[in-house]
Image (cartoon, rainbow, N blue to C red; front, top):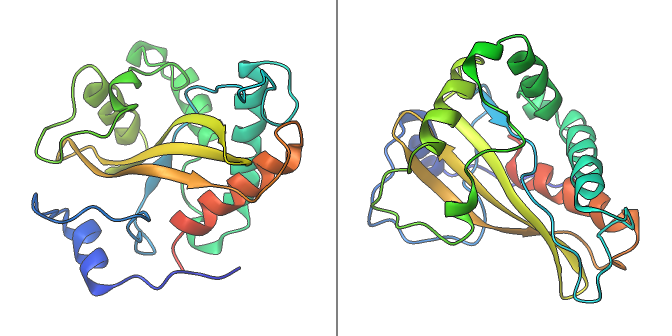
Length: 203
């Protein structure tokens, strides 16, 4: 699988957490340096295609989310650079062992990020606190939050955000698309998960 080479700018951005407010938006996520701990949360929501077909032919939003989470887990498992990232099953298990935190990782206050945030604004509450509590369980400052999966132009598309919880800042917000596939085909979600892992995992 092809890797993107992390630029020195991106390495400085994520290693030091120094994202300039004036930095222009980019179409692909910033590279995450190897060795930086990252939490990948469960997918928060799903929409059917315009004809009412649930992506992957699952029959419901819940099953679409479950299937995509499983595909993402497998895809990141194939990426050596993300071998120590905390994926959705690990997040769910850790929170189940810490019920006093009171955070359901599949039901976060994500809706305010369905539209692109102001790059100068801090992350809103209660989402910032929720993410900070989850990240602290893994000693991480970076969180990948998959917001919504939908079907556009014959591809499954995942809207996601990469967040620095210590700075309460959204580092990147945008869509990642899979390969062309029928909405009812599981291949639509498989290729989407592979693309997410290829875009985000360190080289």
